[in-house]
Amino acid sequence: MVPTENKEDHLLTIAEVAKRLRVDATTVRRWINSGTLEAVSLPHLNKRQSYRVKQSTISALLSGEK
Image (tube, rainbow, N blue to C red):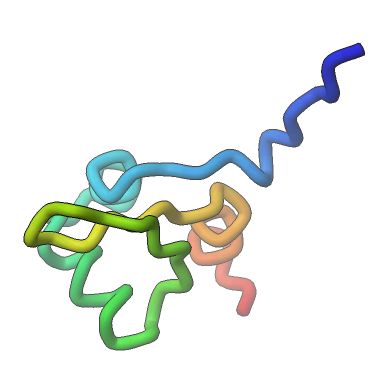
């Protein structure tokens, strides 16, 4: 049996987060680098670090929770 994925644990890309918060992707990256927005960093081979943000983090931010 395949475990069902919890929607709150879904990981979003920088572009998806930017679209939902109606800001530029650069702003999202700044928030992550400053510690304002919690994110998971992925192993990378490119010049730019890749991140994913939990859906629950965005939901909490939009609802005003900490």
